[in-house]
Length: 377
Ligand code: SF4
Figure 1 (tube, rainbow, N blue to C red):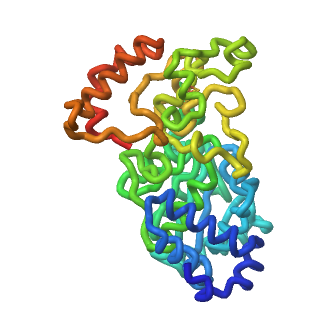
Figure 2: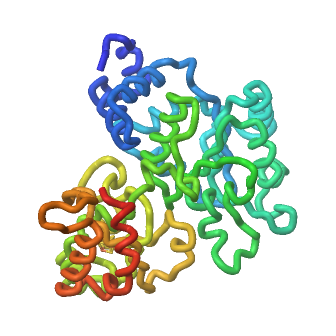
């Protein structure tokens, strides 16, 4: 990386991190996004260029401010420094030191002066029932505030499960008609970063992409950035060998739980939840800091229809039997032994049956064949 192109000493002061840590971070984000090293250089340049900082309007609806709290508590490289330096945070109801008319006027001025340029971040659900009276800020409903801010936004990000689809507020019977930003803003593209709380790294990586390339990263059918939500929690879980071997904990504190066995039978939703918790963990401090890592089943908080909807005691649907990323890939071709990918997957399922991972394998045998042709990493 051409380090001498940047004024690093100035950047180091601004970010509060040293050059090595910062470059390592950019390279890591670029790699997570599936981009070449040159993209890391572009990202570093984007952060170094203070003029590139997009103004950000950050709205809070029905929520606990968990996503903002998670962002502020992230560790090295100090993401709160990076995000607060990477963007120009013009309005944020939790972090603004001011309050009242002055702050509201500043928000309106920023949206007016930066039409088509600002980034709108929505945190929290939007209650639509009874004309939106269940969530008001500065005398205006969240529905009106969201519509107004979305109209001239360059891009919209729903940060957290509540903003992504309604989260816990939308759980049955959903008395306030809570919904997420993509469902409310039907005619707009909304990038979603679900999670309760979401991993700040998924937010910062996506914003870094936006600042660098002027557009949002590729998303899936639920608006999630593919680079962060392309894999099931189950695929990279460190307890996965226990699942494959049929070794399960059945209750908190039992022998299997003490030994670190798979939590599937305790209701772990990792097999049907897309997120990178198992590979990225939280807070960058290592040591398995994420729910399954500390002995609790995955709740499926980032998966619409699972988190806050499916009871913890119910078993997860096992979507795929694809081995974790670190396993060798299976080539989709006939080799000398005449084994195709489909046959290999079927054989894998049969072995799974023999060793006990497989009430699920048998149930999903048909899907295994089709998955093996599309999901080969
Ligand atoms: Fe990990 Fe849960 Fe999958 Fe078991 S079921 S391997 S604990 S994600």
